[in-house]
Amino acid sequence: MPNGTPPAPNAAPNAAPNAAPGTAPNTAPGTPGANGQRSERRGPPPGLPAGTPAAPARPPIAAPLPAAPAAATTPLPARDATTQRGRIEDFRGKRQERTEGGRTIITEPGRVIVRDPNGQSFVRHNDVDRFRYGARDVRVDRQGNDTRTVVVRPDGSQIITINDERGSLLRRVRRGPDGREVVIIDNRRHGGSGFGAGLAAGMVAGAIGGYFVSLPPPVLHIPRDRYIVEADGAPPDLIYDTLTAPPVEPIERPYSLEEIRYSPSVRQRMPSIDLDTINFDTGSWAISPDQAAKLQVIADGMNRAIQHNPQTVFLIEGHTDAVGNDVDNLSLSDRRAESAAELLTQQFGVPPENLTSQGYGEQYLKIPTDGPERRNRRVTVRNITPLLNGGEANAAPR
Image (cartoon, rainbow, N blue to C red; front, top):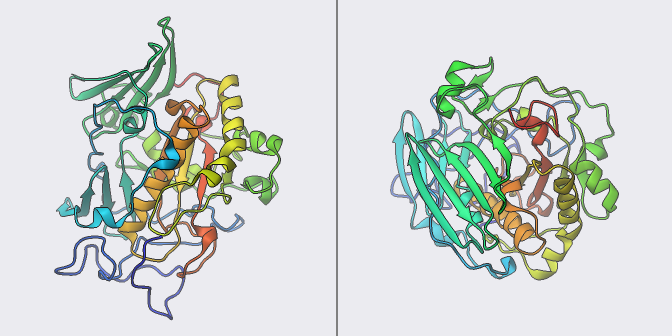
């Protein structure tokens, strides 16, 4: 966690922010000591364990989210993911802030942070950046308003990603050297040439701006320690069973990756694993070699699940404690989740196209405290395939 000005001593752990969106005058966005605004934090829904994402208030702005960063197009050599270096303070001076459609938009290298007027914040990045390591070639072309990125691996296989003009994922396909294709994600389920057009044609009640869905909390019929599994000490069979577990409640329809990323009430439908064995240094997203070894059992479970169903998609979620400010924490958590995903690929061979990552900063505290707390600095993993496919883990994306 980055160092920063702590909240007022008597502040309630889950109190909603009082400050208006934005940063203090003459203060760089996201620097400690800004106006104290935080993303709104809520306790878990009734009946669900601590750390369960709580559904935020409906965003007051229904417009689609601003565009995600464009992916770089230069192949990068494969690397040891434990050797990467970087700290959150390296980005504070590179941030730029603007207001767009009532939202505050903060950009930094590789990230776009979006702050809604109701206090909810999101961070966006481009998964394709992670695919470039070890690639032989990266090609980008336009298809109307959409962007098609082809990452070619040394064996001739390809990862084909199609994004709309906002950077939202439309489709991801793995094409083998023999030309056979496996559709990993297909968000063009409602028809239309683009994600926004598809949602407009088939909008579902509760979906806002193409990314936010509000659902009631699920009713658990499984033990709480099987709904959120602590990785530390969990046997391999329990890890695998959790990574392939069905939804805790029926899934009414397929959800897009954007809806899953930004709608906690959708993610609540799937069990998860807390990687409480991974600890990060303050302000850093590097994973040390001794910490990396603890991901072996997770990687083994993932690879086993993907071997059984090549369309399996896992979401790697990053969380921080509440020390520091919300912009730093969103960026830091997103980079930590990406770091874990990269390590799972580079060191343990989990296909990168079967992983996606998202940071949530301090929004979903496992332990309700504004102080430093190791258990809040965590990475969480869940299988989102049934959410993408409308409840059927082995069904082809619709």
